[in-house]
Length: 93
Image 1 (cartoon, rainbow, N blue to C red):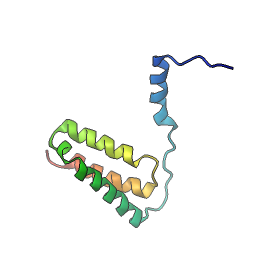
Image 2: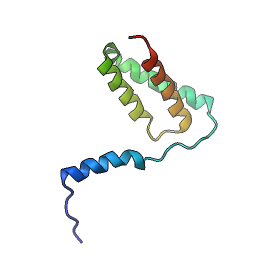
Image 3: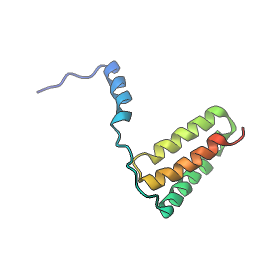
């Protein structure tokens, strides 16, 4: 059976729904080694994109990159990324 191609509006709607389909991390104890690994990975990304820290739009772009890099990783690593994201959000501009 041949399926009809989705029109662009349906594709946009599916992309918007994809965030709800991602499995949410379950509650588990935080592993300090993995937490520090997440922080280290996030700092590596920040160091590679230092120029983005100079403007509010750049900071938002960097935060989006960090969130994308943390998707699908264990909760302890995600918490390490979140720690760095919080530092960027609360830093004086």
